[in-house]
Image 1: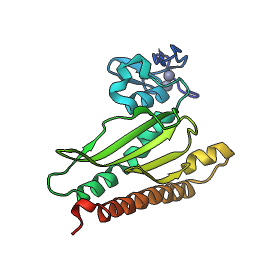
Image 2 (image 1 turned 135 degrees about the vertical axis):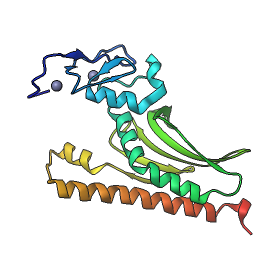
Image 3 (image 1 turned 90 degrees about the horizontal axis):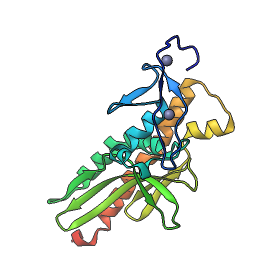
Length: 204
Ligand SMILES: [Zn+2]
Ligand SMILES: [Zn+2]
């Protein structure tokens, strides 16, 4: 890291699914050690995002793939809201099940997609699933699905700005992030309420 005075450097041991090794080195303060393996900051974030998948060499994202970290980041921001929505919507016998990590799947066009999901389940199976997804087709576009419907999508403001090479002050950054998350939260709440209204099994 520029300006770091430490000389006890470790190498990042991240190796992606194609066998490419990260070439970064960093001191203990600027990297992270997870389960005895040392990583640079970016790859520590990737490994934390994909959780249990990190032990499967074929599941490790490409060296420069920030998508799992992005999905995890958005998921952490929305987790409390989504849990609360599902818990409030739960009927007797239903419970909320939450993924502990970002998972890899494919969309209908066979594109790789990283996603994290929250589910409302009952003993006979799935009632409603909410997921946050980013596809390799457009790795900046965050999509929110409630059931089979895409209810919101957007490029996070900090990524849009990075792409445009824009710089804004902290107050504007905070305001833009809040607006973005507010849009996602409201879209989810509306879709969950709509799902319950149209849930014919319970219509009286
Ligand atoms: Zn350092
Ligand atoms: Zn690395």
